[in-house]
Structures are given as C-alpha cells and as structure tokens.
Image (cartoon, rainbow, N blue to C red; front, side, top):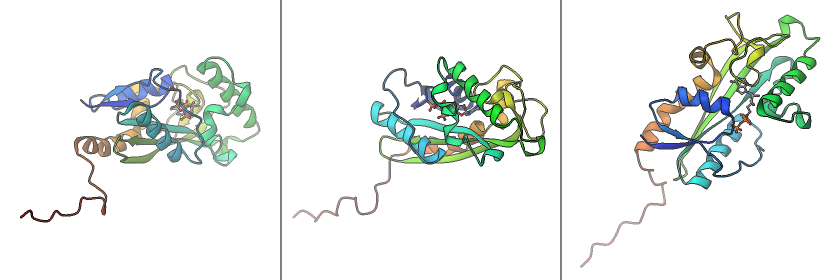
Length: 219
Ligand code: ITT
C-alpha cells in the first residue's frame, strides 16, 4: 500500500481518518517532521489544500489533509474556519482544554437563541496533494441542531453539542463507526478516496505545451 502523509496535528482527526481510510492507503503522521504554518485561507477548501501541499513540500510524499469546523446558522456560518481558535487567546492548555473553552464560548453566545434557530452543520473539506503537483478537494457536511449543555464524552471539539438531524443523541454519544458513517469527514474522505487511489496509481499526464517537441528522424 502507498504511504500517504496525514497532514494534521489533531488526534481526534487522526483516529477518525485511520478508520475511514483503513485498507486504502498507509497513513503516516507528520510526527514532528515540520511545524505546520498558520491557516490563512479564506475557505475550508483553501486551507485543506494548503495543509496537504505543505506536507508534500516537507516530506516529498503524497499527502491528505482536511480543514473542518462548525458552521452555526445563528452566527451566519461562524465559527466556520475559525472553529479551532474560536476562544482565541482565552483557549490555553491541552487540546481538550482548548476544545472546552471554544465550546463554552459558543454556548454562551447562543444562550438566547431559541430552539428553532439552533441549526448548524459540521463541514469538512478533504484534500490530497501529490509531489507532481496534482491535487483535488471535496466537501462533506453533517447538519443538526445545537444543545444548550454538552452531552457525551466521545469524539472531540464540538461533538458534545451537535445532535445530527433525525437523531436524539450528540455525535459525542455515537459509537465511532456510527459517527464515521454520517459525519462530514466520513462523507468527504469517502468521496476523496476514489479520486486519490487512481491518481496514486497513474503517472501525471504532462500539461499541453510541456511535452517534448517531436524529434527529427536521424539520418
Ligand atoms: P489540523 O489543522 O492540524 O488538522 P485543527 O484541530 O486545527 O487540526 P481545523 O483547523 O480543521 O483542525 O479545525 C477543526 C476544528 O473544528 C476542531 O478543532 C473542532 O473544534 C471542530 N471540528 C471539526 N470536526 C469536528 C468533529 O468531527 N467534531 C467536533 N468538532 C469538530
């Protein structure tokens, strides 16, 4: 199986992607190979592609990455691409501490929002990039409503407050495989895999104009 770098520092994502892509490629972590730069893109797709390309530059291997977050209707789609840093400098400590600070701030902001306007979606852009410059990015989404209090201990980030449409439990209360089956990340990476696998198996087609000119027959 081809080695593909999984360009993330988020352990929750590593666990999910190991499960979702199991058996298709051999995922290797970035494990200190480089320090990821700041996320400066204007969209989930921009950031996902930038993370995958950065991993290729540093490792020389094919890479996959995602950029994801929670888009809240009552906040016009925020925290969106700022989900991991929503509490800003107030979010210190371990990743779990930062997740909790982000979640508490969001619940405070939504305290007066009535139940019928607590819609939100987890969104994921999944990208691959190859050393020859080829890349692709796709989107996945999981819609639901937001609780007023965290519920459940599984998953990470905002999982304890999102109840997927049609369910009565949060994504933090779902078994890992059940979250994967409906999640934004599951949907995006199940779409990306059939694009990535043939790309890994086939050499790049040279762009028009970059092919060598036909040689004159030698005399
Ligand atoms: P990398 O950039 O290293 O991958 P990150 O945690 O900074 O790690 P993002 O920039 O994509 O990743 O931000 C994702 C944030 O969105 C994450 O920290 C959570 O707060 C939230 N999020 C994304 N997917 C989620 C999920 O499945 N469940 C709960 N929260 C999620």
